[in-house]
Length: 228
Image (cartoon, rainbow, N blue to C red; front, top):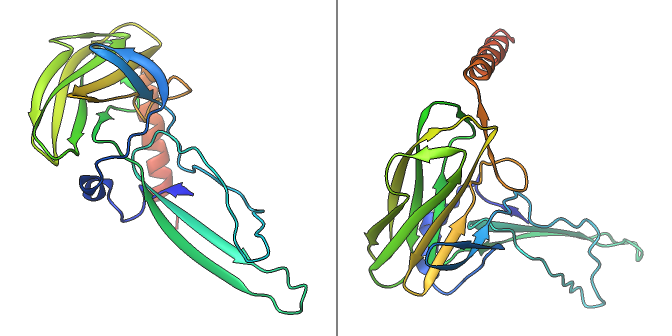
């Protein structure tokens, strides 16, 4: 079972029709209540190459989905043992949507540079059947926000809203961010999916490191262009 992010299925098209599926990740807290912070983002939710069926050809298994709010595609392939002299094969796929009535999706760079002013954003989806006033906030370490960290927006039914913040990166090794959304009885919280490690931290590089990264990227691009 893997995420269909690289496939043609778009979660934004499907989440509008699903209102009652609520799934959270690890525990955490934010302003205005207790939040389940989503921070376990992976591309493959489950893999098992040796699932055996019973006598009537039925097999069952259980899996806890990661924190990705997306469409997961289950790809099942089967082959008989051939013990009776006949080998049969089969394949089938099934799409499973993981979403929430109110969800927040952080929009961040993969890394930041010390001293730079960066724009952080989050897209909040309202998948309920009514307009909703949503408190959207961000908590961060390793940077200083220019304005208020909390904003209130009104999102129409089955709509979405992009919220932005401006901040200056402090002299730190990493930036630790958590994004929160709360509206009515629903809430969601997420770490940046592009972050590194278990805590989903964004590396903070010095200007010298930035120039080295750019130089390496240019060299790699030039090398690729010279290949036959």
